[in-house]
Image (cartoon, rainbow, N blue to C red; front, side, top):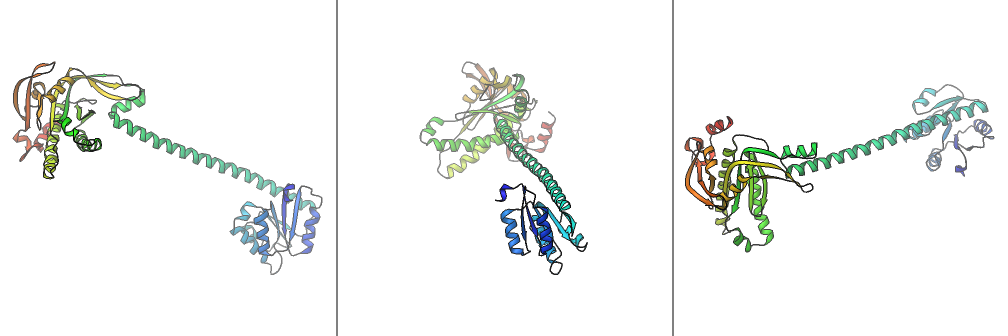
Length: 394
């Protein structure tokens, strides 16, 4: 029945004269629905909870002059007076200030006339309707803002994931160019050093293993190679089966790349020896590694428009691959070109001119380790402080 009316008024008083005055004020108000009640707290709160009046008219002067205030305080504690306007009525100004503190929205002195009461009621209803609208808009804006913030945060998370994935696929500088410009132009590099690694007898070793075991074992090696090359400012290009390819001197150019890549090669072979010793002790198959290194010119860039791949091209790449093929297990085979860049710092054994497929004869050297004055005592693969100071000068 209440829903048929524009607004619902709840009047609370134990004074029959006050209740009668309220009733007379709204007799002709077709848009209002009026409930008159004596102040029995439990029933009042049930009524408010179940029917949610639009306004409460409360006589605070009855009983011991504090019951009305007690009910008003209860309303405030349940936040009801914050949502529903409460108009208090009193025969004097006693307790008015406390009533306002407890949440009353307006005050009307008894006796009052019909017009004054209806005007006060409609004013409060309009005011709270306006406040409700503003609060609703603010709440909606807050929800929208929160949703936008959540979307922004989610986009940021996804962006970071994409950036991380892109930088795992491409060098950092290349990934940034691709994000900012949408393309990466190929660049020429006059001096880079290329390393190829390959496992001896990989085909025969892998024939006795399940595919999962092969992947697991390759993962151990290649993760370690990644760590080592990254520490020496070397860019991993790709893996091809059991082969690992990386290059020093790009995308950021440096003059130390022949030394960097030979240092990394020594560290890789040192790891292989330690790891293989552990495998032998357990009676496991040993994987031995060949390494080939060459220094020369290349062109580097991103190929493809969907599955991006950063790669290098040039005769130097093919030469490095041939040097790896001509190497031996546990050895680092470098070209005469690379040797000229590193000979001051590393002990090398000249192998002579070795035939290489489609390349003719190439001067080749095995790197034995750092020269005594540049390495840590008893470890020819670990540079000492003096060497690192030299390297910093490049």
